Amino acid sequence: MDTVTYPDPRTVDLLTLYMIAVRVNTSSSDPLLRRFPIQYTPTEIVLDADGIERHRTVGFHPPEEFIPELLLGIGKAAVHAGRYSRALALLDKVLLNYPSSKASSEARQLRQICLSKGAGR
Image 1: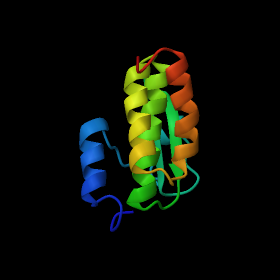
Image 2: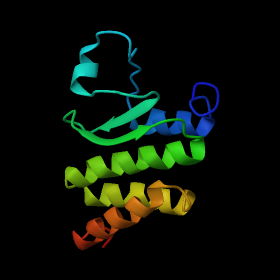
Image 3: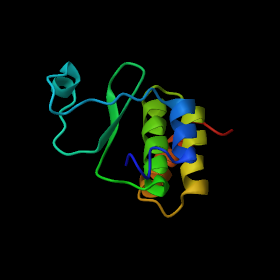
């Protein structure tokens, strides 16, 4: 991930716009590891504004999979916060820009929830 995905300009843009990235040494006694157990690396966890885990990916992902997974995670956090219009915009980015990604199926389902709550009107 360090040589392919993280330095990709699209990944950098996404992380800069939407995330606060934190790297934890899994061989340390960091308290985050007790709160968010990690069995395999790399593991990316998307938290909401209250620090609740909303999405997790495990394993190497090229930018074409990593970016939609993060957008999906941010979208999930927005859905849980009742911010359906924001979630809809993020999910639409997944579906428009990464339609064949693994995240697109779940993005479609969450999109329907957002629409049923009145987002996009």
